[in-house]
Length: 167
Image 1 (cartoon, rainbow, N blue to C red):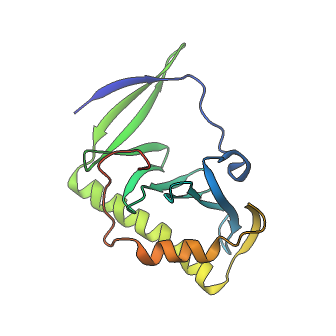
Image 2: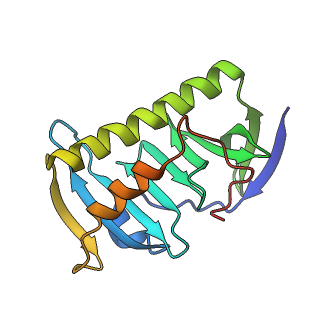
């Protein structure tokens, strides 16, 4: 199942997620022991959650707690009609072409497990206090209890969203 779609040539910079992730109206950056890259976690206005582990691992959920998008090993991931699809970029001189491929059942299981472990590792550090808060927007709101409440309500095993949109 191959489909191509074009997207803008310029891609977003993952350098300063705390500053740039303005769709996340409440967000924070955390440094965890033993992790080279910081984690950025936050909520959109509608309550949907996103977690970034550096620029290499990303999981984004809709308001029902279903996985809607991700990024692993240089590949974009999106939900499409309850299935997961890898998107691979092909750069040309004037555009970026996206090739899509539906994940196999084994790849789906591995991706959901990887996403589950990422969330569990992050939330375990928050629960135990084993983190350094390096920034927060808005600065006066403690986001940690909200993240832990979100995780406690997360449907397990992880479910795939019907679409890549936040709602």
